[in-house]
Length: 521
Ligand SMILES: *[C@@H]1O[C@H](CO)[C@@H](O)[C@H](O)[C@H]1NC(C)=O
Ligand SMILES: *[C@@H]1O[C@H](CO)[C@@H](O)[C@H](O)[C@H]1NC(C)=O
Image 1 (cartoon, rainbow, N blue to C red):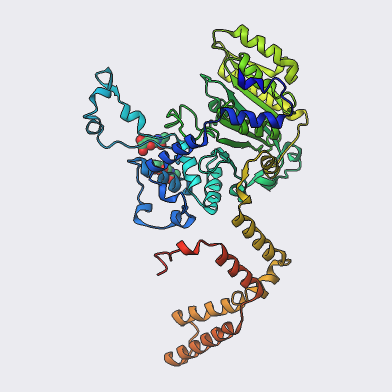
Image 2 (cartoon, rainbow, N blue to C red):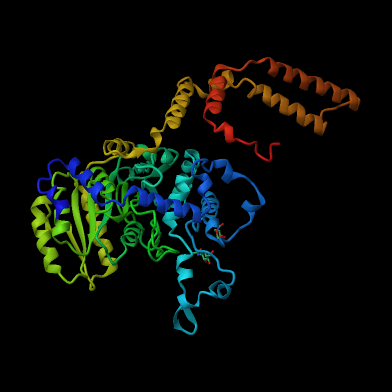
């Protein structure tokens, strides 16, 4: 009870975040050790400081072209990277192919659990793979920021949920991925533009929209992620935006991904009959229990208009915890999965919570053994629809980053390299008013000189306009022309725009570790 003593006067909300994240989170040393262990199993240790770069993944090598099935844990990061680069929907499959299961299991007899003669499960088999989200976290934390951007863009094309907050594994703070999502552009038709057949096309991180969060309190026997997939899937087109227990390796115990917040979006296509919602909505999904992930949970309560708390029971302890949210402006919904032995106790505490969190009856969604799944999904969808109709606040990812910083969450874009690179890019862009004119003036070797050069080179091969001239004479005339164009090009000095660009590239590439590409030498 000593933990709750400090909550008897919750005071300001900020104070209680700190207390909870301090009291309940696994100690950093333990998380860091688990991370180290995963890296060593995935053979990624060497990329902890010298990150994997985009060019490592784009490199064309025999290994990369082969459609290799992962045979060991160390194949998983590269399998994920190659598949996601190819926008292949199977990228998150972390199953490992067993060459000869009999061989592998021999010598492990005492660990085998015989169910019947044809079917046996061994410890080895269960342990052999990793949860896809563990692999994702490890790969992202071992990738440089350019590769992260590419991974997230490609994941978005695969319609995978994207990581929004990475858990604190290699540094003491968790990280919001903003820069990593900068490249993503989405196009949609809100119902307000359906008549005019207009559409909107915007950078994802700049688009303000309704945000709704789904979190879990305590343990729960039904899958929140599976429910979310159902809620976000258009009818007859089921899609696994979120990994859940029934997807490949989704049942493997997560070792480092608790505390990960994923985000997915619904964008309407402009069809009032088939669209689930008339406007875009962002949905976030916190992995792990809010009690141990209080900082991430606090962040979600600030950015979201509504927070759905999935739970099976609420006792004194959970009641105290939730009471600390009384100053929060988010609207809370409870998805109560009736399985516990003491529903009366849970309902009693929910009644006590009602005035604290300003709960009305519609904010309690009960799911029990008799609930029809399709019906329940409809209910959640219509609840989200109602929230949308109540003109809730909207936030963009950029705005979320501001709130994250206030809570002590690191934003990927704040690193010095990103800031300097951004400044450099802005310096260059600031001078571009008229694109065609800029190209003519700054890229003086391109444009007409380049076109003329190509024409001469082509003619040197084809010899189509030779006419009556002797072949050697004609060739030599063309070579003279070619040399003249080259001479003109050589006379152009480096323009201001190019100098800025080259300085920028030189400054930011990890030149020390940079080797020329094998195809260039
Ligand atoms: C995706 O990858 C799987 C597994 O390697 C392969 O069987 C499948 O053909 C790929 N799909 C596409 C569209 O390339
Ligand atoms: C996942 O990978 C395993 C092993 O490589 C393979 O047997 C299985 O068919 C894959 N599943 C899907 C859905 O692609």
